[in-house]
Length: 435
Ligand SMILES: Cc1ncc(COP(=O)(O)O)c(C=O)c1O
Image (cartoon, rainbow, N blue to C red):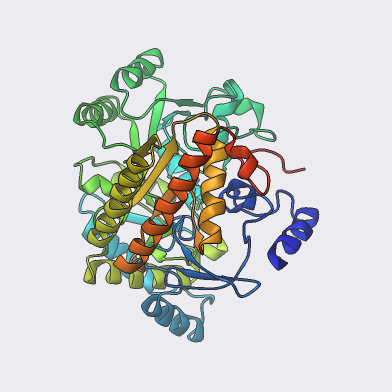
């Protein structure tokens, strides 16, 4: 397989093999995952050997909500590239996108941009710390690779476990940052209030995703909002993964969970680098006093792709499609698991649904599922990120294959040695050294 050969070369010259943990083949099917693509269109991907797969996994790790190489977004981007994607002057689309974002989020009055999610979160936390004048950040969930976030693991190297990616190593993060970020658990109102009480008067920023695996409890939202308002804490909602999937804009609009700052990335621009930090005017104004500036934050492709993506999401009511398709997959998993005696636990909002095997050696079963599905022509894991390119016939074909895979796994469990059916090593579950 050409891609596995290339990946072996990559690991010799690129530390960690890839630039994103979630794209490591080891996270899916070590030694067998196709690893590299030649072409991607709609929800199909062609690997370096010309083999075609239907992507029923992460769709560009959540970026390609309309599908790969979307014609409308690509047309806008090609035009922008031809007109010059960079110059000494600014591109007008920055202003157009800012106005569009504020129209969709009437609580927000100002917008800044970055190009990646983690970087945009760093900007948000910088603005929040500048505004509050306090270092301490309370957070919940995953927010990227930057020092402010990883510093949570300096105090207790398990702090970030349970926040999406286990085992994140803060090596190289200044030890002086120890104690500047403290975790709380999503929907755990009591735990959150306790953390606030223990750090009374010191907290300047609260950071969390609006939603990830479970619906927010109304009392949790209330407690977070009230604490932020009463104690003049800047509330930052991370919409990098949740945004644009349940409704047009941030999921917080659906839950009346108004923040001081909301951050978008990934799906906002359907695969072209773009991120936006939107916020209340009086909070965002502080960005004038702290030095926050970068050359490629001014490129034209990002805002142009963002505007084209948002227009298409709106015109085609894409969030409704994502919810419907995701629900189908969720129900299909449940019914197939029941039919074949598999215990699985399904979580996640409908457009970003996932399951865990509730048997001994769940990672063996997860690897086996990916192995069987790959042989049937699907890039699949225990998660499904819905896109507008996934149509009903893709879902029907996928669920038929998944049913067969579940039947195979059910038999393997009954026979007592599912690991013997693996053709390679078990997949990784979090961050670790490759060599
Ligand atoms: C909620 C959330 N915040 C931040 C990030 C980091 O974004 P990026 O990988 O673009 O830096 C991610 C990425 O998975 C995310 O899901």
